[in-house]
Image (cartoon, rainbow, N blue to C red; front, top):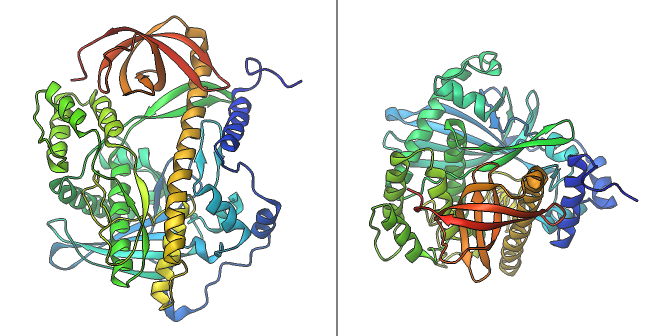
Length: 498
């Protein structure tokens, strides 16, 4: 008989739960024998075709990612350009070079469509011998990449862009928190920066380019949203806490560059007449509730969805109370609705991305972690080589629907295991009262997120008249670690989040 969750190491309990829930959601937690055999028998990464592959290893490339990330998809670098402009280069790992379409590795990646990040373990889309080594842009190694080059003018507009295959070299592996503290003047320079000649100045140039890009996106109505992610904190194999992670200057730098690169990639494929898979967020269906939420904060929004007006409201909400802004932001995120993938055929009028206020957008910068990006990479490489598309239109349409469905399944796995982790922490606190925020309210149920640990649960009693954005006090009624259930009862409803 296996030990009960009350006596097993937390990491083991959560790992087994995650694997079970993945199967329940139609995802594969384990690789097939054929995929593992392919991964072990891969040839060296090809570097032939020198005429088509640029040699850019001497540039001071660096990666900036989470402290624990080992699957490095992107490198960045910047150069001064004419007339006060800044040229930014984003190198994306050439995963397709070792994971050909139709292989056993590709079949697993195509089925799951994404790496699944749970509280206890990562279930990678590709075996770790690839995603954290052979196709990862690890420091100290030359790697093949697809490089997007963009010239950012002083006013923040992208004046030109191009895409090419290249050989690159990661000179420094950096982490968001350390880089952000250094850029903001609240922490020392991370040691790897000082070990690369010119890297410090280059990162400050990148920071300036990101600021320019962000300013223009906000002027066009891109939403500056900030939600809290809970990071598990383990002591050995025992879970001790869930810490809130928030955006910082370094995460925004990479986000701005990736958004720009994804837009440039979409325009590149459109210019070559290729059908593609776009990432879209449609106009919000619950705009009237967003209008009401803004009114409760003393702001007026137009009756029709307007991203620029919504961004102005968010900006004022952040200025009024920066500490509570993530709560307002979370309410807006819930009301905006989820993103999705759609196949876009040249000549069609595909929807844009409401949250980013852009029309041209695809996913292309994380091919080790997302299958949409790997498929886009194959399209780009075919266009560069003057070859026909590797995907037919009907195949792209079916793939887009599958990507959306599997992303939803993966998100549900991550949320459920996150709730199981929170249930482990909260099971000794049944009966306690917590302050929180209503994050969902519909015929399917009412949900609230408490502030610490930052976790969501269902309000099963006393939820009458609650709506998204309400600040509430709830009593913990029960937890179920196996199912990831956390049940609350409403104690009272406070003033809505200000």
